[in-house]
Image (cartoon, rainbow, N blue to C red; front, top):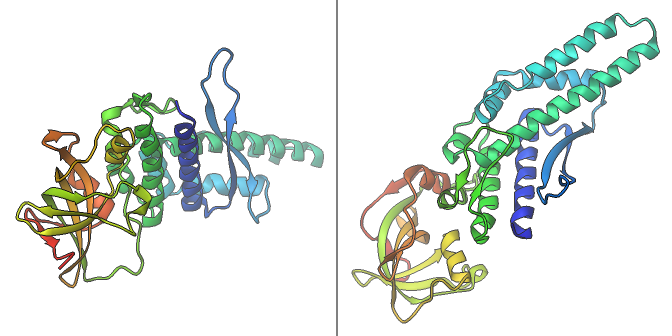
Length: 333
C-alpha cells in the first residue's frame, strides 16, 4: 500500500470522526485519531480513537454522563445503529450506571473521587469504541446509506467527501485490490466498486440559485483540444465537438479516467473520440457549465460503467435527465 493511500485513509477516518463529533456532541468531545504500533512481524497498522476530554467544558464524570445520555437520543441511536448495526451506548450506560451506584454508596470523598476516575476512564473507552466503529463505517457503507442518515446536509457532505477522498487514492494505487474495515461486519469492497465510492459529492450551497438546474446527457465527443493538466482545467477547459458537430467546452471530473491518463494507459491522438456522461448546468434556461462526470468509452473501447441515478444525485443534487446533447453547443456560441 502506498504512503499516499495510507495517509488518505487516516485523513478520511479523521474527517468522519470530526463530523460525527460535530453532529452528535456539538464538537465538544476532544478526540484524537492515533496509530497503534504494528503487531510483531507485521506491517499491519491499526487506527484508533482516543477520548482525551472535552473542549471548553468542565471535564469529568458529570459531563461524561451527559455525553452518554446524548448517545441515547433518538437521532444518535438511529445514526450509530445504521452505521454499526448496534445501539450506541447501552454498554457504556450500563458500565457507568454500575459505577454511579457505587459512588452513591462511597464512604469517603477520596473513595468517591477514585470511583469517578475509574468510571470516566471506562466510559471513555466505550465512547471511543462507538466513535471508532461509526467513523470507520462511514468509509465502508454504500453512499445511499450515508445520504439516508438523519443528519445535516453538511455532515452528509463531510461523510461522503471523506469516503471519496480515501477511494480516490485507492484507485491511484494499483496494488490495492479491495478495502475491508475489520471492526465492522461489512464485506470487503472490491476494486471495481472503488469508482462509485470515489464520486465527489456536491457541496451544500446556501446561496444556490433557485433557477439553477443540472441536466444529464450521454454524449459522443470528438476531443479536438484536451487539457492534460488536471489542476489547470478551470483556466483552460477541454474543447471538442459533439456528434452533430456542435462545439463544446467542458472539464473532466472522472477520477478513474485521470488516473488512467497519469499511468499512460490512455493517450490522445488527433480527433480522439470518447463517449461520456455529461452534466450541464443551466441558470434561467441558459447553459453555463459542462462537466464530464464519467468517460464510458475511449476510441470505441469500453473503460467504465455509467454512474447510476443515486450517484448522480449525490454529485449534483436534483437534476433533470435528458438524452440529447441539449446544452452542449451553447457553451461557446
